[in-house]
Image (cartoon, rainbow, N blue to C red; front, top):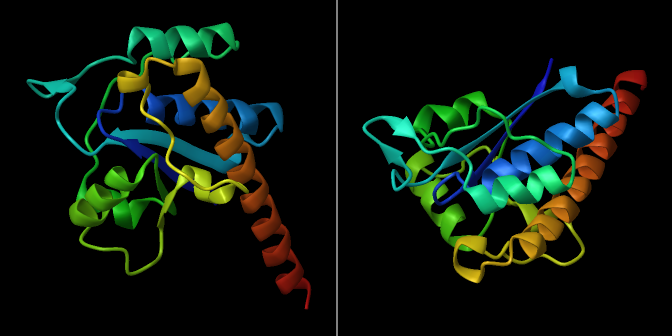
Amino acid sequence: MAVKILFVCHGNICRSPVAEFVFRDIAKKAGQEADFLIASAATTTDEIVGGVGNPVYPPARETLLRHGIDPVGKRAVLLRRADYAFYDHLIGMDAENLHDMRRICGGDRDHKLSLLLDYTDHPRDVADPWYTRDFEASYRDIVAGCRALWSFLQKNALSADRKDLL
């Protein structure tokens, strides 16, 4: 069964789609793409007009392309309460996202909500490049977070496999 991960940020045009496509790239390079269902969503409708989401913000898209990753076809979508039941992990980029995720999802009774950089040795918010204009710095943080999340999931899978053997 695929592990379902939803990356979340304010508008779903910068950080969360970058995380979505970076994590997909990691899974693909590991030959485990089929083991994951990866998506991203927004906590607001700021980038969704008339029910249609905006595409990945051009500087974020250009940053991904410079690193050999194409976010083809991605448009902003809104986080919904039902996403909490569907996804195994819902991962925000900053404390404000996490606050909004708890509100939208009706809490976190199953402990599915987290922040991306909490998986690293240097937990903090992923700075929003919409404001900082430093898309490369945000990309580096997102890559570090996705790699740490990958390691976390691999360790948990190994632990689960070992439990099955006992």
